[in-house]
Amino acid sequence: MGATRGGAMGGRNFPYPNRYPDALGLLRLRLAEVQHLALADGLWLPYGRDLIREGAHLVDDFPAHRGRIDRLAYAPGDWDVVASEIFTRHGRVKVGFLPRSRGRGVVLLRLHTSEVLRIRIAWPDRPSDPLADPTEGAVDRGGHSRRASRAGGPAR
Image (cartoon, rainbow, N blue to C red; front, side):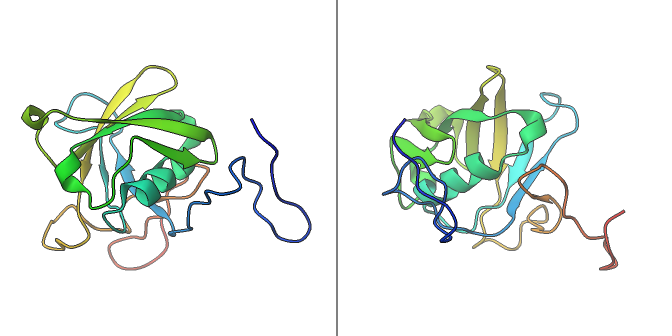
């Protein structure tokens, strides 16, 4: 890989100096405790419909204990800005299209372990979705839950 930038002056330590993903906040992702037993392995609430930005955020902040994403597949009609690859803190991630028969509102994530997760998307412009509570599945980079209790108190 190329040279990295970063250091005492506050520059980002990032292998692609011309392609910095913007910080978006906590990753709003809820993963199922037991995979492949439900219709989806998780629920993701992106901040917008720019796959380049949102995909980089998903890859960079995906819970480390679950693995690292090395490929992403999506339905092209779901996103306003699309790409065939995204640049992340882990390097370039290949992106592919899902066939129309797979439907919309879902992304498939292949992890470096070859496991494939089916993640349902809850769009931010559709707040009527009962599963789209952004505080329910928010995780930090270490994969620790940042969820608050229903009463608004600290997480248990």
